[in-house]
Image (cartoon, rainbow, N blue to C red; front, side, top):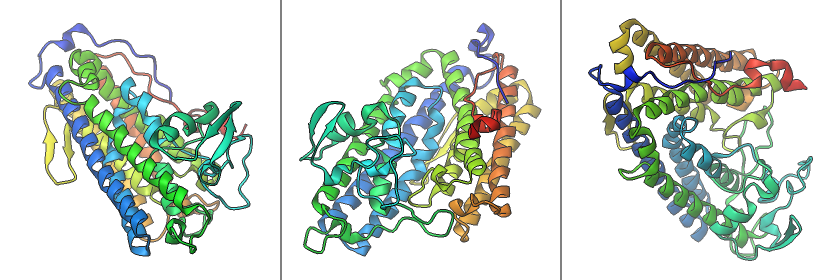
Length: 416
């Protein structure tokens, strides 16, 4: 499915002709973004504290607590991804906190069977290598700091797979590699990898702990930055509320692009085509089913103008749904039904995973049940994207160029 290039909203849409005006809708959109990033920040701070406790007293219990905090932090963050594609401030920042997949050997030890491919830094193992050469320069990584991770290591040599920061770097350090392929099981890093005694496993436990703490501190700092961007005086809020045309454009672009090219295409259909568990979004923890589900929830949040916070309170207001319903009640009913259908389909993947069929198992060649579940989610997301596109036209916009994916638009290219 391809969508035509975007033109601007008609001037008429900028006038308050609906009970829910574009001005009011974009304010709700910004309020939900702020609340979602605030929740992402507070859960990351909880993760930061759990990591500090793990480092202070390594044990099965403190490692499990840190993993639990990481999983909880993913719930609000994944709902924030709908704010990416229509907002350059978010899209330019996102790679610092949620980039994937990663060549994890850049950070720490990996299984001997792991190959670096064409990436010369894929097996660097910074934790075991205090000094190294990068792009012809000598790097002193004796002290591992957030600044070292952010400015030297992350996307080193301009290679996107050199992910050194964010949720997935932390995920790898907590779980370790998942070496199970499409068989059951996530990563199984032992707590002894963080022991500051002779019982340390994996070597360099002090530097591993330092890296994990620095990565957690950096994640919190990055989320503080994005939360400020959506505050009452923040530039991200100003970009979508000062010009309601731009605000509606951002909201609909984010919904359609996450739904189609990113989630249905790159994160779901591609893995099925390749039967490759490396295409899992949360591959070390086997949490991909939740990541996909909460992406779907986030898309629906924006359309309905309602977000349920981690404390159970609700942020809501005039919505895109209100605008569409005022123009064509039937179209609003259809789009809400399509959004519900995609959340249901993603929920079926989540339920199957929680019942014992992990997402990487679903990707196994010949797993008809898993393939059916994933492709059911893909189909529902594609259908809802077409409805989003029709709603755009209904509201007086020209069609939007949503993010595409070869896995959907040109599957043969995936194998070339």
